[in-house]
Amino acid sequence: MAQTPPASSQSASPKSTQKIPTKDDPQGYSKDVLDDGTKTKMTLGSPPTYTPPRGNADKKMPDDLQEIVKAQFGPDFKVAAEKSNGLKYLKPQADTWVPFLVADLDGDGIEDAIIVTRCAKPMARAVDFNYTVVDPYFSANGFGDPKITATMNNDDPNQNFIVLIIHGAGAEAWRSPKPKSKFAIVNLPFDSLGITHVVLKKKGPPATALALDEVESSGSVVFWDGKKYKWRDLGGVGN
Image 1 (cartoon, helix red, strand yellow):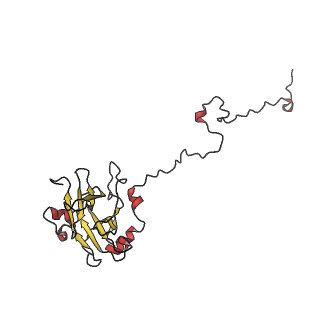
Image 2 (cartoon, helix red, strand yellow; image 1 turned 45 degrees about the vertical axis):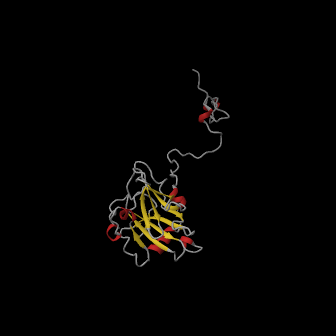
Image 3 (tube, helix red, strand yellow; image 1 turned 120 degrees about the vertical axis):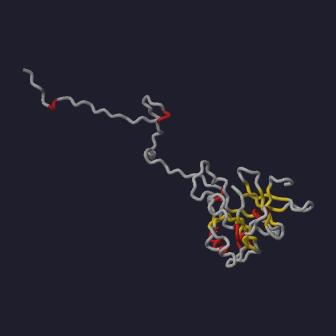
């Protein structure tokens, strides 16, 4: 009867080693699905956090803008950095929403500031902070007493914006601790703001104005006529 040789005398089977396929040694795999042999960080299961593109609001708005608003108009006014007030839109609007602009609106050669804010009671601190609340939109339509109209759009998150205007003074312009004058404009109809020009007199130069762009209309403008702010519909006859 043949005896089985001891385990120590048996030939050991060669241990096979499987190389990892690389682009230099694809081993039958497509090179497009292989790395170049360098160590890479796996992201499967922990993809990088998505960061949405920053809109014009973030690019244009000074870091200390809220502090300036608080100093010039009081703590009740909050810069409207975004158009939405908690509502979700089907199409993002952040890229076109700009809450801060600069321009020489009163024509004195000194830069003024335009700031979009929210405030439930814009009349409350007008005396304390020496600003004027105006309603050129309702005034143009025959009823513009801001004491009555200032809170008419409080319940509409898309229209309850207060546009603050600081007429600059001296070398610091609109950043001056004591600006030339300050206004809080209520009830302006707009989806976004811009700077444009209007003709006030047939023989005079065009004046800088605030453009009120609306999705569902031809838009309108607000301009300083030398004494006060006025609103003009660009879709009307003669405009």
